[in-house]
Image (cartoon, rainbow, N blue to C red; front, top):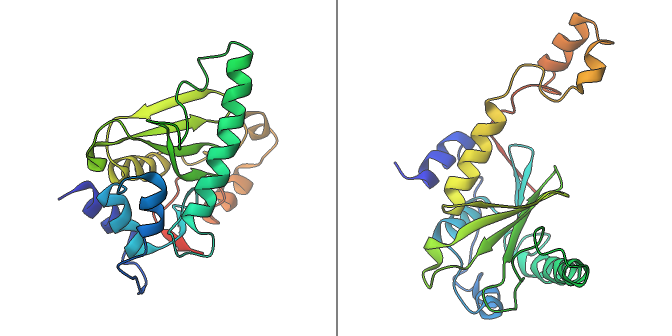
Length: 198
C-alpha cells in the first residue's frame, strides 16, 4: 500500500468533489513545472482543508486558492530571507523562494506556525523533498513525498500521551477530573485522523 493510500485510509473517504482537467494549469505555469503527483491527487480528492485539525492544505480552486497563497507566502518569505541575509544570518533561511531558481514552493502550513514547502531538488516533481520552516527555529527537511510527510504528521499527532496539549505548569492546578473531561472532549491528548474541508 502506498503512503497516499495509507493516508487516505486514516483520513477516511473524501466528500464528492468536481475537478477539471485544467485545475492545476495556472499553478504549473507559475511554477514552471508540474507539482508532485501524490499532492495533486490528494488535493483533487479532498480539496482545501485541514488534516487532523492541524495541517492546512490548499487546492487551486478552493475558497483560498493555492496560487494566491503561494504568491503572498513567497513574497513574505523572500523579504524575510533578504533581511536575514543582510544581517549575516544564513542558517535560518538557507533556501531561496520561488521564483528564484531552485526556490522553495509553498503548499501549506500548520497551526503551530510552521510553513511547508516543496524543495524542487530533482527534475521529477515526484522526487521533491519537503522543507518545513519551523516557527522561529529554522528549517527541517523531510526526505520524501507529500503523502509520506502528511502520513508521518498524522501519526505523530496520534501518538502522543493522554494529556498532550496541557502546559506543564498548568498540570499542578488541574484536578484529575478536569484532565479527564478535557481528554474526553478531545481538547487534549491524541488527535484522531480526519480531514475538515473549507
